[in-house]
Structure formats: structure tokens, C-alpha cells
Length: 319
Image 1 (cartoon, helix red, strand yellow):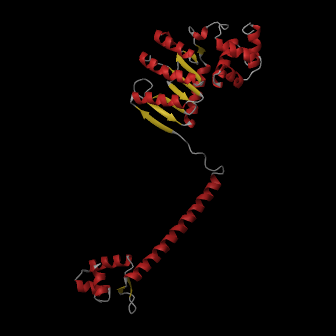
Image 2 (cartoon, helix red, strand yellow):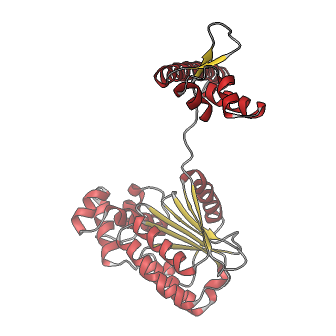
Image 3 (cartoon, one colour):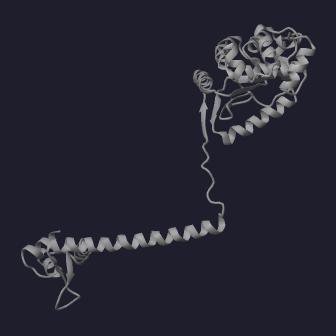
């Protein structure tokens, strides 16, 4: 800027003359000239185009703005051309258009207290179904007792509740007691000889799996997203089909030993009432009625609601 000040304010003329007055070297002159060109503060001389002379700041500002506007226009044209090319590529090679965005999140949780908080959150957000699979190792008794409060909340809201256990676990007294409690709150319990991994699935949307399947205290991975959880549900359903109802517990009560609520549901079912009507009549949720009907159909060994009403009448379960 010293060159510009010398040339503009003191009338030294060209940039070369100003540099000579200031005693600048050739390298300093060239560096200064490049900077003045960048700022639009010099122009070619009238008499000799090879000689750079300074211009007023006002003219420099106008020239710089025009130059930058031209540069911006070139960039805009380049972007538009690139966009058109990409659109042609998409039309040619992706005729079905872009797929839906994968809504999928993972969280690694090493703190066991945070794992419990995540389970509480899943319980609160559950609306339709809760599935769980338990291959072992043997859980701590106090953890089962703490989890029972969550299970009761799920049962009270009428969710479909299914759980799979390795049969060996069910022979432990405190586990057997816990499973009987689960049955009373609405769980359907099945057992099998082996299970691949411990998991808890909520509404085909959220899942919790162990961080280390061989170490139950290592933490968990929380998964939020149907795109992944659907695959875990398929694993659960495959294991469910290869399992058997829990023996030695409440599930083994004689088929005709009905609770008052079950007896009422059967009676109303036999006269053709729908789940919604039955729910209003006895003051429970529709999900609770649907779960009760499904359990009664299983115990009666039938495949339809109509067959359930007929079979129950034939067996003397309803008046």
C-alpha cells in the first residue's frame, strides 16, 4: 500500500516510479504490483500499456465489484451445468429415484444405570408390543425384581407381551417365581434349549442388545430404527416358532380353570360381541381383551373366535 500511497497522493505516476522513489527492490515492486492488481487499484498506462498506473479508490471499488460479479456468474453457470449433468445421470441410472432416508441410530451404553434408564424409556414409549429373548447367563435376582415394575406397567397398558427363555434358566427357583409373575401381568412365556442372543424389542422400532453377548455386565447397544429392528424381530419369531410354552407354571393350569374376567370375555365372545364392545363392557383396554381372547383360543385349541365360542359352549365353560 506504500506504493499506492506514493503514486496516488504524491503524483509519482506509474507504479515503477513510486517503487523507485521508495527505494524498493524489483521483488518488492513485483509483489506490490500483484497485490494492487488484485485490489483493482492499478491500470495499464495510456501511452504505454506495459506501464501500470494507479487509479482512484472509487474506480477500483467499481472494477472489483464488476470483476467479482463476473466471477460469481461463471461459478453459477458452472454449478447449473453440473446440476443438469447429475440430473441426467440420475434419470439414466436411477430410474426409480432416490430411496427413503434410512432413519437409524445406534448408541453404545457401557453404564449399567444408563441401560436401566433406556429400558424405562422403552417401557414408557411402548404402544403395541414388547418382545424379549433371554439365553443367559443367570440374571441377578434383584435385577429381575426391579424389572418387574416395568413389566407391570406394560401389562396394565395392554401391550402384547412375549418372552423367550432358555429352559435351563427356568429351573432356578427365583427365576421360576419371576416368570409366574410375568404370566400374571400378561406375558406369554416360551422356552427352548438354546437362544442366539439376549434382546429386548419394542414396537418393531427400538431394540436393546448386549454390547458383549458373553458378558452380561458389559453394557448394551440401543438401536432406534425399523430398518434394523425388523431383522431382529425375524430372529425372534424364528426362535418363537421353535419353542414350547412354559411348563410347570401358570400356563399349565387346566383349561377350564378360568378367571372371572376370562369367563366374562368368553361369555360375551360366544354371543358375537367384538373386542371393542367387550372392552367397554368390562372396563379394560381393547388390547387386554385381544390378548385374553388369543390365550383362550390357544387353550381351547381353535383357530378362530367363532370356533372358540362354540368349543367353550360344548365344554361347558359358558352358560
